[in-house]
Image (cartoon, rainbow, N blue to C red; front, side, top):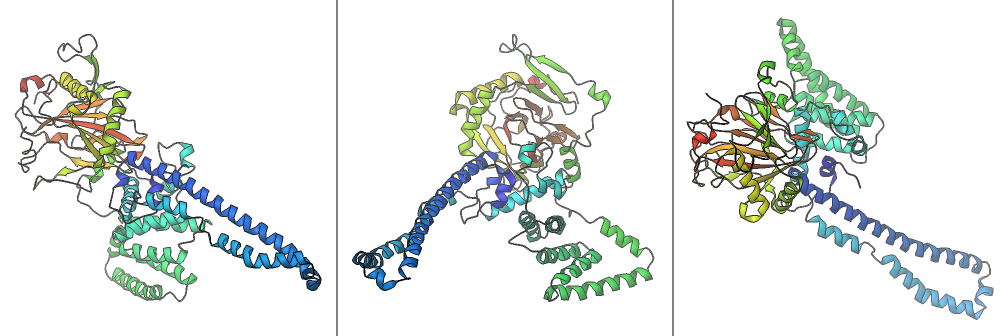
Length: 540
């Protein structure tokens, strides 16, 4: 059964099981699809059993209907026959009891048992809320209107998939409620308007009505300072339900506030213009990330700063790392992605078979990705890093060891002091907001427990193509690198002096459509000879 990746999270039953962050990993959400498929098969088996049961009861009732109709026309004559008298006694004493047992037989036992077993693996309320927030994050980052999302016609999605991924009135309403619960009245308005639009177009709902949606809408636009629209929604609500207590109270309040506002506007010139400007700038509330707009522009492929002159200095080449024995005969394909800081991409650096093995090893161990707390140094989850990751040591499989060796041979950097290979899978709206890979001066304990110094360089391997979204963007220099399966990008995080290069601040953009797999190798200072990095590090 085809189910959209994000609609699944909005529609699945919830349970009281521990929070699993399902929506952060497409790999684990795939398991949910097959779980649901098994449940549908079990449900159909239950329906067939109930239909067979009802068919037996119907046949019995039809037979008795014909018999009793004939018998009641001449009761004495009918019972005068000894066989009829015997069969009446038998039916009433035995067969009606058997029928009662059949009617009382619970055909749902197998299905309920299967559902109970599977329910422990279901997403819970937090997962559903997280998926809803992810959908709104995609909406903002890629500037998608609610109708585009509701119809499922997303950039990069196939037409076949889009035909089966529409949001219902109930889905839109639920998204609005999630935003409302977070006091996010901007998104509350957007999704309640979409729900109202679909109701007005004739779509039906068994759980929500126009009055309820208008109630949410009037309050959400009021909270954003638009008294006139709040009043309009309230009046429309009262046309449908004149006895609505809250709406009647709001009507008087909104009318009073609007009259008061108009008096002030008449007295003070320019007040009206200011008020209009306030309404025109209604939108997403300010958040903790000062570079949010720049980050989202880059994710959309906008605002990239690369002049034609600089572009002309970027080349592709065959690279053998100063005639390294492994690459003299078969050099690797190297492409300049950015000039300052220098970011290079290596093509066809791993095989499909190797990537599948890495994913296979990582899947059972995928956990919500963590960050190092800048104050305590403790690893913890963060709302701005939404993915699942696993760590693979070189000793765990020859493929991991071979990839580590390949990184060392190509970069010329010693990986024996590097961190294990981190494998990450980005699910619904999966992202990692702007950050530095290296520990900064205000984070003296960032990698102290490793005892290997700071992160000198980053190797980022893309293990899947992504239909839409998922770019790696560098917000300080306005650069963007797009995922390409089997390629790896590499950059230095530190200057030769050991100082951090703040131009390497980067982010993983939300995945709009598709499944993003990457693996990271963070190479540390200890064990490196700085002269060996000159071949890649630009002169500063």
